[in-house]
Image (tube, rainbow, N blue to C red; front, side, top):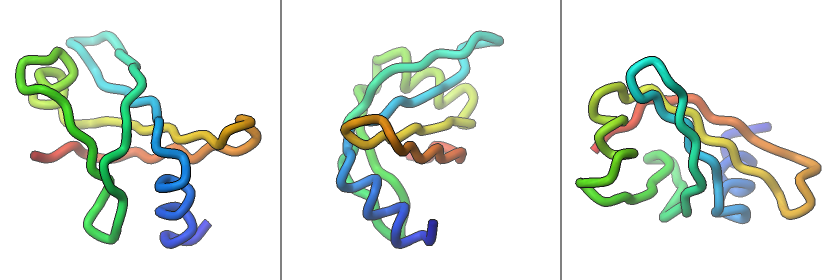
Length: 82
C-alpha cells in the first residue's frame, strides 16, 4: 500500500488497537483516531491514564487498524510523541 492508501484506510477505520509496553509486559487497548495525515497519526488520551504513562516511559508503539469485516488490517509501528 502507498502512504496515501494507508492514510485513507486508517481514516475510514478509525477504531484501532494500540500496543504499548509496561515494564516488560505488553499492553493492548482500543483507541479512537483523531486524525491521520502527512504529519502523522493522531489520537488523544488523558495525562493521568496508564497508556500515557507507558508511552512516556517507552514511546515504542504499534497500532493495528482493521476494516469492518476484518478481512484486511494495517499494522503501523512507530514512536509516540507529544
